[in-house]
Length: 113
Image (cartoon, rainbow, N blue to C red; front, side, top):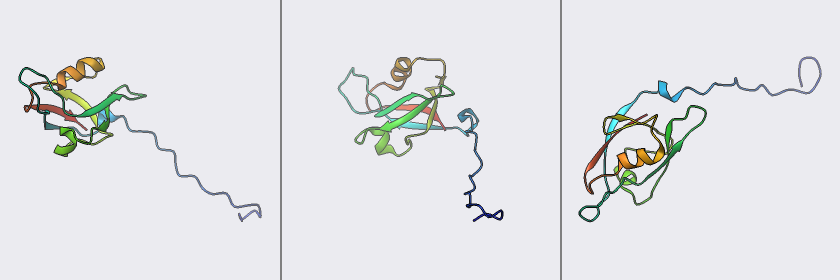
């Protein structure tokens, strides 16, 4: 019951404005690409998508048996900022996927937050 004699009203927590992910600290990680036959190009076992409202790439899931899940450096929810020294914000998703793929068993350098 409130002081005025009416029903008590639960206080709502302050509304927090989401932080622009571009302001998050970034780090560079090396992730091993999956094994595969000679001449093949393999990835690291992640799914990612553009997020709203900012349009940045975010990891949405790790394939359970993928190299990213095994390596432990990446987790769903992290943002991708660069691949092999190249910024990716203005690239389409297919281009980013191709940058991540490479020689089986080699490492790919990612910038994440």
